[in-house]
Image 1 (cartoon, rainbow, N blue to C red):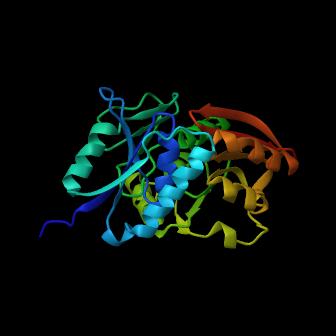
Image 2: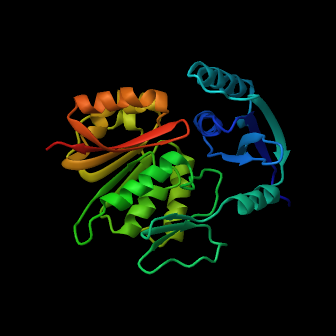
Length: 300
């Protein structure tokens, strides 16, 4: 029996807004998208793939349209903004990932690559193998890339450092942290499919004993936490970062580093102000297209 086809949902957009549109697809449909730029035509498309036809309905389309309108109100040129849906064979989906997903290096410390790429790591370079799944984070997105850089920059050889990944997605940050020597490593996500994929990725990377993703809703966790971590990553939407600030901070050690991502540049000042008011100092930031991420140090 042939596997059922996938439903491919695409939005035609602009280079400027491609990552914001991809984040919108992720937020509405719960599956990590890919983006494709056609150098000949200049067209940019963000697409995601759904296993169940029922996931695509009038309500989802309306939510995407509303989200595109919000991006426009934020001053982004979203381009055509046309939403399309079509059926695709799973084989076509898999091969398209193989063409577009390339290895990623974070300095001399970390190499991320799919299993079919034969590139060997440099001496002392940790390797994370991630093959695309329908819920996936590749590290190529600006926000994930910043988090990976901060994991590398904050790691101190010979020192025990713990790590918490809030909203783990594919598990990429938690797996990378384990490979870099963080321990213990804890991670969770609200989406059960993301937890399943993260567990599979941890097993593939032979760190299943170190990285055990669980399903939690951040908004329903205890406000205070007895366990605190040296490094906390929260790659979440703006609203959650603001509303759940105290819940996030209760899980950070007094001398800890907090990495915040998933923030539009137009929203970053509000996030920065909220966390500075809680006693944190911005120690690193990066702007990539419309995104801005930041690392904060707790002041004792």
